[in-house]
Length: 258
Image (cartoon, rainbow, N blue to C red; front, top):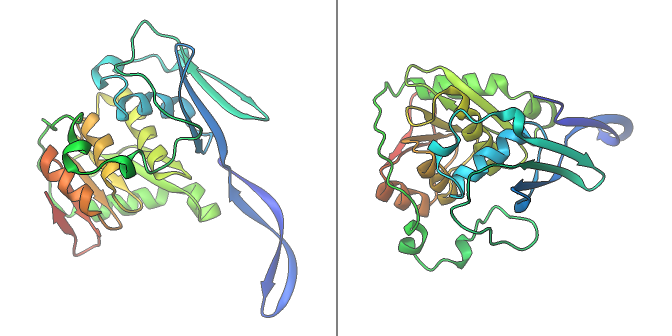
């Protein structure tokens, strides 16, 4: 997975006294995602699992279809680090479905602020065809299992996580990142090595916004479960796309949307 945090010297105020100490901070890098020598996105994120970030981002943002990248050779992806960040690139015979359209660093708003209504947001999103059944009790257990894997968060308190879980309650793949969208992209990328994400439940360590629902739809993920809240647009998108959201997941309760 690689190191995703580093120690720095700090001053701490304890009981009115200043003490010299050290603290672990999550590493934040500029990450450029490049496909066939064309820059797809420039993100701020954690450099670990960057190859999976590229694959997942290509799927979740609609540049390539999931089926096009199944069994893709992860070793063909090149990563180069410098003082200016990290370049993650791949050359392929595949062609992007649409041209990248961004200026500067891609932010977590993902263009939602430029959209006037739900119809605009749904225009290019596929209906999720996958349907699964499971016992709701596995959701909280899955969250607890994911929590035990959050080494970066335990060290820094500053990282999000995402997982894909089977309908039997087993964590299939896991990722951490300073950005919750990046963590989702990483697990979608990792799922390519496990036969796909369409029979899985997406677990989130935070809230669920409409953009996470959009990513799930492009990966054909039918269920999202999150510790936090769901936004109104996420709920509306989920209902329209055939996705079910479980929000505020606790041991004995949760809120079901969709």
